[in-house]
Image 1 (cartoon, rainbow, N blue to C red):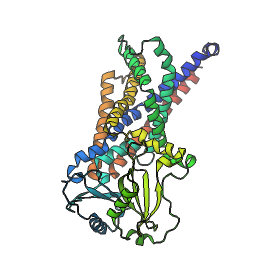
Image 2 (tube, one colour):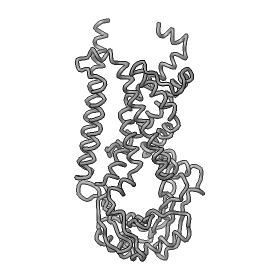
Image 3 (cartoon, one colour):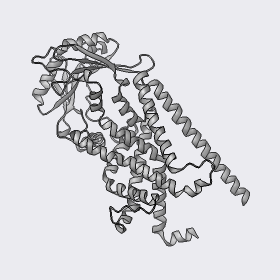
Image 4 (tube, rainbow, N blue to C red):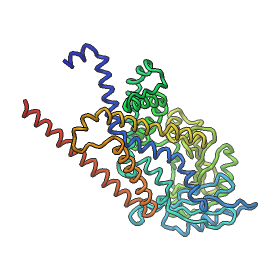
Length: 448
């Protein structure tokens, strides 16, 4: 009978299929989308939070005369012979410090990124830290990889695809409904209808934002697989044609950081330098990366490359004059994180960012209320309020525990906790679902 109705009313059949896709995407990816929504909003302000939590490292007292920074950087580099000096961060304001970044690949159980902070006026070392122990890195790591280094980024990418499908199907399902009901009306007949109306209203109102976040999130999460197939080599990177030095000679080659900065500012005045990165592959180059204000491209992707010998400019990458494909590529991350329009745009992004989590929450409530009668028959039935509180407390507790572990013992232990805990839970739920499925099949065969 149902099949006959579906053939007679193909629109109803399509509506059911779209609704099923929307429901399953939201239900299975909802928790991940909610976590990404909250962590994404926090990650928007990771730089501001890092500065606020570590004022003694990032801020200095401006003075009339600056010290020579190059000898200090050389001295710091000599103190870390096993590390690669891959970046020297340039202060953007007069009251900010310089800081160096040294990367240690295989030291102990995991990699290290040591940062040394320098007062540009006195030359004093303000302090050091391993960036992988910082709260700023935690925010980025949990949002981009769900704190799981092997397939976490891919899970985030798949969640982006789920959000994209859920957004499109949701608009297809509810777009027509919103014509029948005044746009901002929230019916209060019962909790399910009230949450359903909120779900539709927020979903339609934030359609374009969620589409943008879903597309860019899916791209960034699955970039390791999509980029080689679609883009090939990453645009904007300097690829040396020759290597005149050995790696060791290149690493120890001396040049003046301040002269590099002066040449950059003279030849590219609209460019705001962010960091100076010397080569250690034998190419004898030094690259300055930064941003051109009032452009919506990914931060610190504009570039000038000099020869260390004589500091002559040998290459430049200005995204504004690059091809259309490069521009599309370079706009993905800035669109996702909203870091191209200052603090005001970040606040706007925060407001919209929470809506993804709100959609997951309201959708989950609608599902729980709709299935409440069936769940009442189960011996382990839990009321809506305590169930939601359990999930909320569990997620918050997990995030706090991971942050505390990472900031005290580094990446290895919390990563293992996530891997073992997440994978064990997924495998258990999958095994349980398969057992129940085969039981139902056996019962059907026995009845028939």
